[in-house]
Amino acid sequence: MDPSKSPSAPSADWGTDKSAMSHTSPPPYQEYPQYPAAGYPPPGQPMAGGYAPAPQFGGAPYPPQPGQQYPPGPGQYPQGPQPMVTVQPTVYVAQTPLVHPKPDYLGYSIFTMLCCCLPLGLAALIYSIKTRDANNQGLQQKADGSSRTARNLNHAALGIGIAIIILYIVYTAVIASRH
Image (cartoon, rainbow, N blue to C red; front, side, top):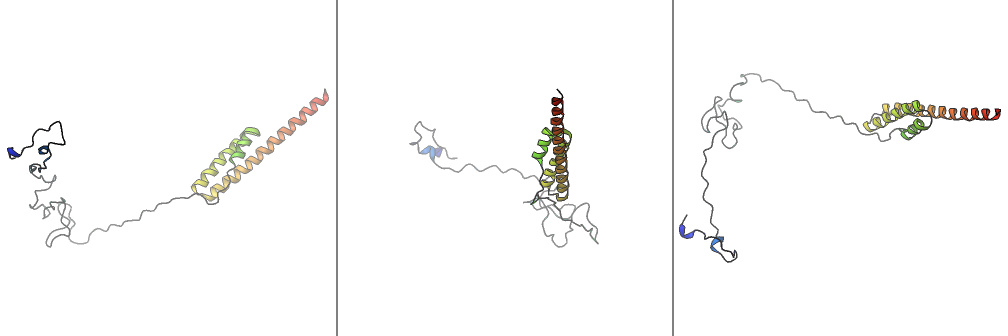
């Protein structure tokens, strides 16, 4: 660089020092030696397969030039029939929620579990949850069966609960009439 054109030290007033703002190109970068990728000879030298990789990509030129062997190097296929590769398509199975889901009777199950008959209400609650899961997975038959079972267990629990309440009322009435 020419010492006469070197920028002066910046002054306190940045707006007035024009020599510090002169645009000069940066010094050219030092050229670094280009090392080939591991396992490859330098560009332009032949490999075991008969060609050198393309310098810009590090791979084989495509299509192969006449007289070149393809694929190169160890593991070459013998001249003759090539092994056939069959590629199967990927199949994704996604089940969508039902358009017309079956009722799950969840509220009914909670009511019968807490107010009528705990064991049957608990069983009905389990089937209600199974119905909801089957509806979300799109399983029509499983949702239908679980819904029907939850409804029947809820009806049975409600019947037993009502019967227990009626028997309790009758029992207390009979006891009260004896005194």
